[in-house]
Image (cartoon, rainbow, N blue to C red; front, top):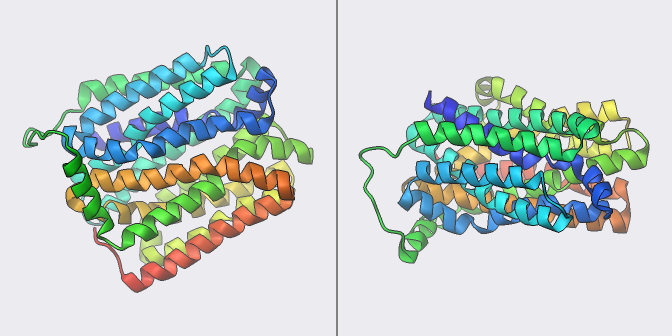
Amino acid sequence: MILAIFALCSFAASVSSRAVDPMTALIAQDFAVPVATAALLSSAYALPFALFQPVLGPIGDIWGKSRLLRASLWIVAISMLAGAFAPTLWVLIVLRFVGGLGGGGTVPSGMALIGDRFAGPARQIAISRFVAAGMMGQIFSASIAGVLAEAYGWRATMLLAGGIAVVAAIIASVMLREPPERVERRFSVAEAVRGYKLVFANPKAYLCFGTVMAEGIALWGVTPFVADLLMRAGTGATREAGFAIGAIGVGGLACTFVLPLLLRSFGRTMMMATGGVLGAVGLGALSLGLAAPAVIGAFAVTGFGYMMLHNSIQNESVELAPSARSSAYSMHAFFFFTGQSLGPIIVGLLLASFGAATAMAVCAALFAVTGIVVGLLFARLGPTGG
């Protein structure tokens, strides 16, 4: 039951996070701005998600992870509903910034709660189920966003995403409480610093955090541009972009269903290397300018590979410092969403300077090389635990 509640929170947070990406071109048209400017909506969400993690992590450890999760979901819900009525792009960007702050307390606290309540191999499976719910949210939001936005406008999609977040916030507020044995502590800078020292005392922290930052740049920096790239190639538009981004979730969800088999067959470190290679497939398809159906299929492969790599890193991250688990996963989210906030800016510059084919080839190479190198390094170091 508790995992189902965490999964609902992950689903709602993912819907709110990913619903805007396939609508970037439509929003740009509505506000009469370049696509690269509208793509800043992605950075506006990811930047506060990342920047506030050093504060949110200790708050979760000290104030309570369940309390943080509940409050964060309400912030996400209100910001999405308000965004549907934004009169200008800059108001919408500010609201996405507020939503990113709420999102920053949602997924990391949920992941940390799973780390507290599950151990051993069951933890990686539980994490995969939590992430699978997020992937389902991505599939739902990206696919529905494209169709709904073309039929009724992007504001209708934001209203739907906000409504889903309200439902999750209500259920979490009713059902989630701090454990009775938990000892209340006061927030202090010294306590926060102590937690982060524990995290970075583990040398594997640098591998985990560097990997997710590269993922954020290479994959999620591209998604706001998918519709525009398909339009440039004459192979699709907002609807097809939504299906392509949703296909990442389909592939990731498929991976969670066979995760126990993959762990037995590959082992965690080989999963990282294989995941990096498979994760580059969709980006490679964009670099070749393939037709929309081929791009959609390739992005499903990307989602499968992404999950192989990302889930393995998540499992390592929650074991970096068990006594400061919320802080550890907040650092994970800090670097992941820093990559996501920088990604659209970097990809936009690559597109402007070198064109679509080269920019996508660079992103594909970054994803593949990251998985291979990190897999090899973790193979030398051995598993963190759990």
